[in-house]
Image (cartoon, rainbow, N blue to C red; front, side, top):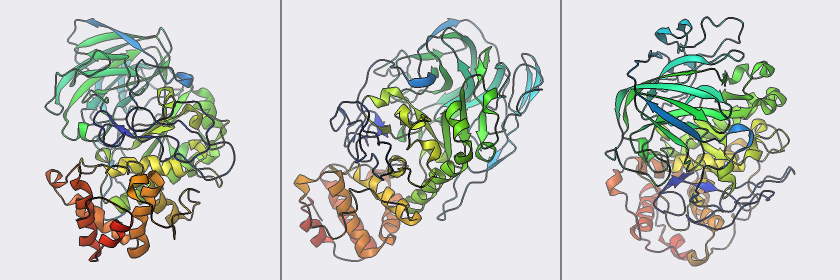
Length: 531
């Protein structure tokens, strides 16, 4: 998922890990390659096989241009800066997330209570419940109060113009969905005030788009390496040249701050007020998804939320799969909780992970980890047999979803990275753990691991790396990895080595937690520098 450290095998630039052709049958076009250059874009066929993408595309490929996405997920916008000091009405968002306690680590982002914001007078009259615009919200579908803890969600009705909405934008949040959908040519006026600090790189340029680190950014969609960024200070009116959902947030890094470490030190909150006559993108609790009136959503897009998961879906897909959405979100939420059980730590400050289509990613990968997790648009298409909205149904290939989320859990606190040749192997370890715990089919490439002879390190592919890692599960059970990650989590980041010493570190930690001599296993597989 993320491009930089954990993508293309430890390349250092965007922290986005792409998972492309990790074993799923391909039906999409794309260039092939490894590392930071390119990643094979593979998609599953419509059969009910269990092969899923998880290993091939090891890195985030560098892309240029804003690209185009299906059904309004992209779009460049142009901003005209205007003078102004308008103070936005700020919603307090007093909700709290209860989380789910899975392994002794309390998670955030669970079921929420409250979430009502109190705001002053906004355009169209006094508003409550998340600073909704357009006056009293009568006649529309009641918006969900959806803030979780410190993380902002903007509740909107389905069948009214957007109007004016005021809300808080935490610097540490991986993009706030404003709840606004803009058609090409439609405008939105955004007013911003407040102070935040990112990561001591404020004011530095990135290699795409006009904005600087630390800027307040408005963007259409969440395209990978998006050039169509709007840097807003004070007040600006933006005009969409493509249709899509408007997101806002801090720009903390070259990868747009969608990965881990770039927001770990981000602090502060800015207040934003957005005014537009555009359509809305409702945020729907998964328990309401089966009966939601999707035909009332003029934008054609909704977000379905579980405890840890947000699915950004076209309404035609959500409507078709309404009865299956609860099971789909529950499956992804369960993967999250099982990953947490093994890792003992949370990615993205415990934020819910958004899954969204991105045609830019389709050019070089099947999925790209981070927050959001970007997907080939086919995965939200109502005609695709392995789409994410039916992930809870039998026969749907879910390995890739577990794998992509596994990327997020391999690097939650900026203290873990991939050794050479294992960029995709560690996330696959999380996939095996989750799917085996649930009794779900495992990837065909994996089933040959048990009892297979060692493969010398020099000839490893990602599956060989997984088979090596699994040797220790076969010997010592999953408790080996629970203890390994617990020990890793307790190790200061500056004591976790990189380069040739990395395998020595892993070897020594394996011996520490197993209390066994693991050198023979390392030697049998030709792993370098084993202690």
